[in-house]
Image 1 (cartoon, rainbow, N blue to C red):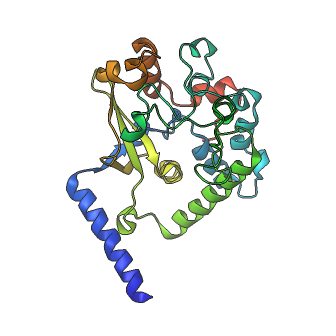
Image 2: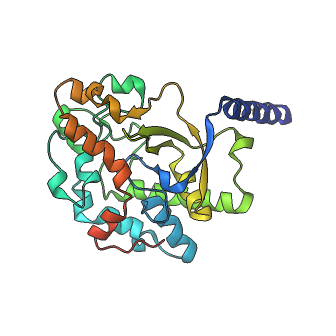
Length: 275
């Protein structure tokens, strides 16, 4: 048993060392990190997981149904979300136009190179109803809170998992180098050179660390299986190249990750940000 733990620790350290040596581990300001729906990790933005942590930290006895996190997902306007267009531009219905992108799809297809070749990884109630698919459990049994917004089951899972991880980090510290696992991000690069880091995994860790530090976040840039999304290549993006989406709409969705931070949506819903 001791030998197995030693081997695992050595493998983790070796993995971290190789990542650092490759230059893929970087420290990036929180305001440049967002999630796949444009909810920033920055204190000036609003991210539902970071809000969950902030509320719990200020009142550990709070119940899930009393949190802004829960109220956000219970709002009828959030519960009616069916497309990426609806979610990114929840606060601006006039921009919910053009080609409708199922959840899990984007003008460029997806962050995974292989998934981009087939238009992404679509999921959701509407997608399943239209296409006759079953995507509810592809990330685990009723695991995705966006599959059926408002469903209490995945919200309870997220609540418990996030609070458990928060306790673990505040009690034992956070040392991704020693465990060999850093939150992973993909890059969005604008025509003018501005960049955003979009989380690919490790969202809970990013939310907790951004809340605890409000400074830089240590992340690893995407692996070879992920792609860098460059606005200059918009004409080659899957949905543009196949004539399903105009370059103008594609750029508008791409730029939403630079122009939105989540606070515009929580304000639109008249909910307090609780940061």
